[in-house]
Length: 161
Image 1: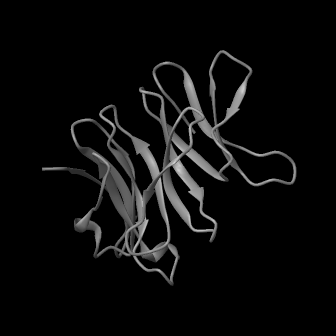
Image 2: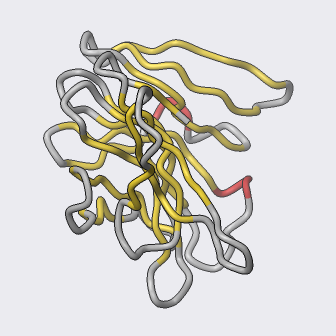
């Protein structure tokens, strides 16, 4: 879940017998709005009101998505695997997350940190030798926070050049 400066909250909700759906609501209102008919999760909301997370595709792959309110989601795409997740969005619209690097093995060891800048996917190559990585947050200066595993767990901060 996330909250932006305007008090909008992004998250996911379920109803009995159903899978999670991305939702958003205003902190001072009792109304919860479904983002779309897609099953998935909303992880973050930017100050511009753009939500990011993931949604399932018909083959049950998980694709990073962005939404503006209840508009249809924008599929941010994948790298070499079937899955991707968008975990955070900066004030300038850059998105941080993870992508799968193997189309057959969807396990955590095949996930790598990535960013979408101006809509273009960039796998964070400095993390390719890690066992797994995930970009968790980023700011408008290009600094990002990611976690992962090499031989021991680490957390790191990296700045785009």
